[in-house]
Image (cartoon, rainbow, N blue to C red):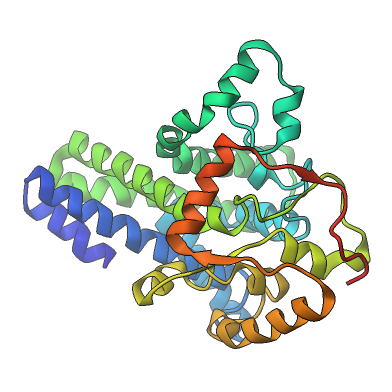
Length: 312
């Protein structure tokens, strides 16, 4: 899908036509990213080498960001403490945006006034979402190499593939579009990916139903945290193909190393578990989940002190 839409974009110089190609290209790019996310969790195959190969092909080479950075940010930090303030960077949008009432309460003057209007600015800021994403991974890799931290071979492989991503993503289209046309395409591709990332990832943790915890969870609260801080959304056939299992965010957080093909069957078991233990199980249609993810910018959510079901 990505290759065909890219070729179509290059072949016909018409604004409306190229806009449609960019939409398809962005959807395909997000699909590659979500399925690479499965590989990064070693859930695509039972062969570790195959998962690692797909991860490096999908992230630094195709998507342009570091696999090492993603492993630290997503596996080590986010999955261990989803929606935990001060730990999970995915919900820390400061100083530009506030997702919680506590952040708004700590602000003063013009900053507090801005937070009341932030929901008007946020949709435009999403255009820079992926650019910031890629930039953060470059800073991570270069910084760790400079300080001598982390696994040097893996970081060097990341750096080489991210550089190759830029050469191929800009250089190949430049053969037909010229350098300026290729740079515009690359920028527009990143804008589309930024918007697409929000549509797929935000519904899992942004809505008010997904608890924000003001403290670190106790060891015995693992299941309660993963369930309470996550929400599912329902997608159609094409949506499920693009999301790669991320529509089952609750099941994914409980069983991150299980292939997403098993999530629909796990869903019934998890719902029963939640009912027995007094835990919430939040699920909505995809459009409603996206709307709720945006609504939290207008009405930031409260910060919880407990999960309501300790020891589960």
